[in-house]
Length: 322
Image (cartoon, rainbow, N blue to C red):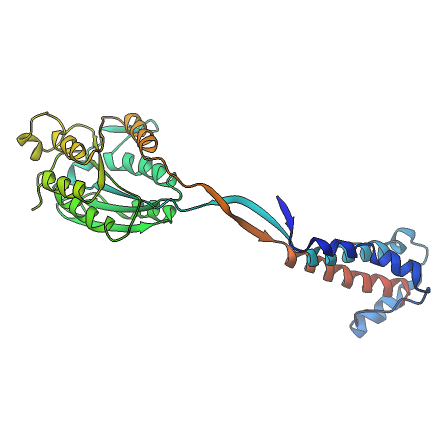
C-alpha cells in the first residue's frame, strides 16, 4: 500500500508544460559543469549525433523522468507493511525442564529420532513466535533454576535463547517447586491483566527446597495460573510417588491448585496439539493497531532525479545543444 505524505506536490507535475507554453523559446543552458576533458570529448563527437533521431529525443525523455522523480520525492511516498500488533498486557512465562532425563532419545521429529529437548525446542519455538503482543519470558530448571530471558515483547529474542541452553546446564535433577517460585518472583515485578506459567517437565519433582504444592498455592494467591505439561514417560520418581494419581500426579496437582490445565504428551505430535490447545486457552489478545511498518522512497527518487540531470547534461553536450 502506497501513501503520499504531501499529495499536493503532484500539482507541480504539469509545470514544465506551462513554462514551455508561456515562456519564449531560448537556447538551453547547462545546469551542471562537466569536467574539461569530458566536455572536449563530447564536443569533438557532437556532429556524429546530428542525424541520430532517437538520441535527439533523449533530452526530452530524461527531462520528463527527472522532473517526475523530483516531484514524487517532494510528495514523499511511503509504503506500508503489515500493521504492528498492540501490546496485550499478558505476561506468559515458559518454564522448561533441562534435567538429565531430557537426554533420552525416545521421540521422533520430522521422521528422525531425537532427544526430548530437541523436540521441545522446535515446538516451543513455534509457540513463542505466535505470542506477538504478549510479554514472554523463559526459565529453565533442573536441580537449580535460571531466568534465561526476562519478560519482553521481543518474542524472536526469547525464541533465540532456546538455542543457547543445553541439557544438564541447571543440574541433573528436577526442582519444580523452585522453578515455580522463581517464575512467580519474575511475574510479580510487572503489573499485568493476566499472568500465566507454562511448565513442561518429563518427570515430577525430586529436588529443591520448595515443595511444588506450596509453590502452587503461593502462585494461586498471587493470581498466577500454571498450565503443566508432562512430556514422555516419567523418568524419575519423587513428588509423584507421594501423591495419588500415578504418572505426573505432581504436575497435575500443581495445575489444579492454580486453576490451570494439565496435559500429557507422549509424542511430538501430541505436544504440538498441547501447544495448539494452550493457544486456545490463553489466546493472544494483541490487535492490529494504527501503526504500520513504513518505508519511504524519497532517497531513491532523488537519486533518479540527480542521475537524470547528469545524463541530460551529458547528452545535451554530445548533441551540441550547449
